[in-house]
Length: 582
Image 1 (cartoon, rainbow, N blue to C red):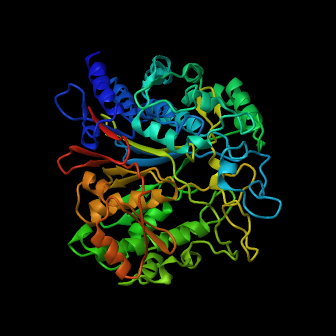
Image 2 (tube, rainbow, N blue to C red; image 1 turned 135 degrees about the horizontal axis):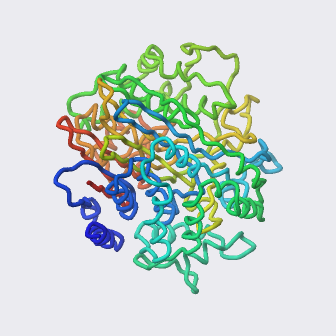
Image 3 (tube, rainbow, N blue to C red; image 1 turned 90 degrees about the vertical axis):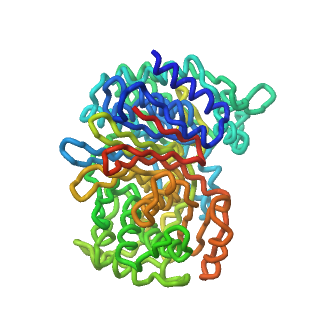
């Protein structure tokens, strides 16, 4: 088809390493008026989503096709053997739903499975590249659930783009090659180090990663897609589940995941959390997602000192944002975990009076008060006598995010992951297995003997930083969808777009382009290549412990509805994001 040829032509230029501006080139179908939009972190994924929308598919249909492609072309970030959260907006009913596809720990998991005999935590790389770290994959079951409720096209039709790409091959993108060049040393190359499937897939006979532009084929993944397309339940009850369990149970550091654990997995449909902000509602996924911290930051900013009209040009506005982050991260780290295992003061954390009280701690200079844990239980609808332990969960980056608006006006904001780069590096059926269980705290009690809420437990879902968000206007109509990859940084990255647009008056792309700033605990990390020297100096002069870091690698995808109904997208130049319109 003409559209398909046009799309592939744009994709090839991008995958061969075009500039950031070229990466932002919009893929346009030949329709007289913009009716729908897709923003993903990869050109192939954007094209796959548009293909589905053009065929009359829903936003959920497009999400399925997109994730099937990302599992192939962006395996360092997400995949069908990983997990996800999806926030869905139904334009007809003006209602929100959250689909939870977070992975779960196997029934044989133990609280000390990531601890050494001397009581220390296992080194992260050892835990990651092992069978211990793989949870039951949840994204496919979640997508199947959402499709039954929101899909319009046949399930089997949604995998054709990914299947063709797997069989015919795709060009290794500059980002994928860069990940292999930087982190390939952690991919086992000998059986003593671990299963070597990934090394054989990505590296040549001389042990070098294939270059950007090299055509990589994955026929095993195409066969997996054939099975999934016929019946997604086969993933959880058939040979794929048995092979995943067998791979997890291989040495070194074998895990306990069984085929029975995989068969028992159930996705969850949840009610969205929403935080009033100005004349909007900012909404996202409830725990085990950490989105509540996004809502807290916006509530603290609304109830705190007003920003100046200078927006991002005023360092004091950045100081306000940094302190709001510190306040929210402190509470999030302390209280949020799997709701099936712990009680949480969710209503207290989003209580207006509590947020106003937290906002009084914001000062014109740095203060330890803003990274101390608060007492949201005092404002909660239920009390608690428990003292939560000080969190020991590690900070790891990864993940992908995409947003979709279909021709009916329905919206998907979805974040998906295999956790760290290439997950465990173990492969089954052309897919990378997740290392999601390293999102648990490796320690189960703090030094005072208090239980840590995000500790490992059988069948528990680890706390997630994934925070897909949708903003509604005062009439309940869709206004904006946003989100990002980035591990614990996701909260800060996502908030940056909300603050940029709604506090500082920027358009979505300008908000995405702002310097990334992550203020979790005492240290405030500022993106060195994007932040001005004057901002870094000013933050230091206000007493902040500033780390000017090059590592603030977000992957934001945003769609906003303008007052005239037009859609405006933004894709993060830090990755290979691209906007597609229909």
